[in-house]
Structure formats: structure tokens, C-alpha cells
Image (cartoon, rainbow, N blue to C red; front, side):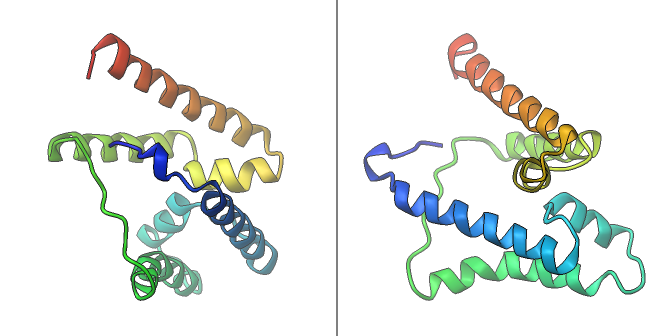
Length: 144
């Protein structure tokens, strides 16, 4: 994946961050639940009576958002320089990591840190550190 720094738009990025923060805050205020995607999807795998509707609505909203956006602007074209095998392996590792870490980046990084959760502060530091280390090893040690 390549980032075109010449077309980086900090105002759009800031607006997106604010929108995510507001959505997470509204979700916890009105529903008393954390907007962590792995927990929401995990709840669909172990459904409980009266707990399915809002989870399905949340997932539908995630899937419909790009469609709504594409009605007003063109979607960015991703440029991914990885094989399907690498993508599947990465997805599986992320899934295992969210189970071991008791949550994902959205749950810990957005919702947990905003609540000053010690577990989320540690988890976020761990996955950020692992990401930095992975990029360093891949780019500077392995030369990929």
C-alpha cells in the first residue's frame, strides 16, 4: 500500500476522527455499549435473545456507509501490494489478536482510551508497538 502524501487532507482526516469519536460517544450514551467491532460481531456468533437487532443494524450501517458515500463521491481505489494468502493470514492473525486482547482497535483505541481504561491503554500501546515493529522489520530488515 502506498500513501500519496501530496494528496493527504488533514482536515478530512480530522473530520473523520471527530465523526468516529462522536458516534462512539453517542453509542455508549444511548445504548451503554462499546462500539468495538469484534465484540459486536462476536455477539452475532453467540446470539442472545433481544441482543441481535442492534448488532445487525450496526453491521448493516458499516456495510452501507461506503454505498451511501459513493452516491456523492467516488470511492478511493485501494492499492494493495500483497497476495491473497498474505491477506488471509493477516486477517486470521488480527482475529486471533482481538480474541487474546479482549477487543479490537476500535474497542480499545477509540472507546477504551476515551474512558481511561487501563486495560485499553496497555492494549493500544501493545498493538501500536507491534505495528511499528512489524513495519520496521518488513521494510528495514527484510527489505520488503
